[in-house]
Image 1 (cartoon, rainbow, N blue to C red):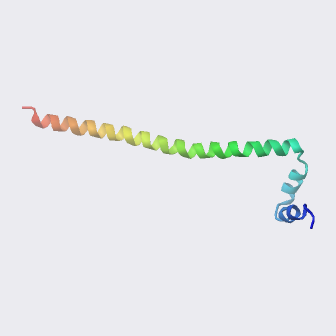
Image 2: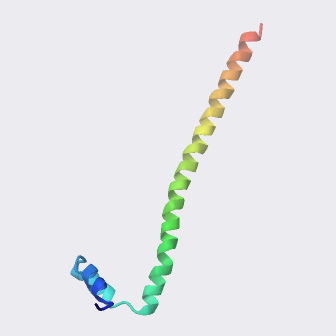
Image 3: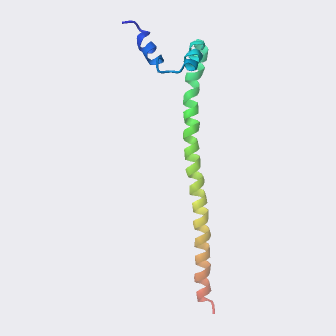
Length: 80
């Protein structure tokens, strides 16, 4: 069995444009893609974290405002 056979079988499912693009890549291009993909995954993952951090910050801000309003109402009850 040849080493290239599994690669050849997996390339069958790709579109013609994708196969043409991949066949024109040099070894340096492949190394660049391999080193860049983890970075892209990390950036996408950080986007999800940043979204939830923003939601949490806005929720805390709203909670503080509501708490302050409630405290001021309670203080008003005890004033003559």
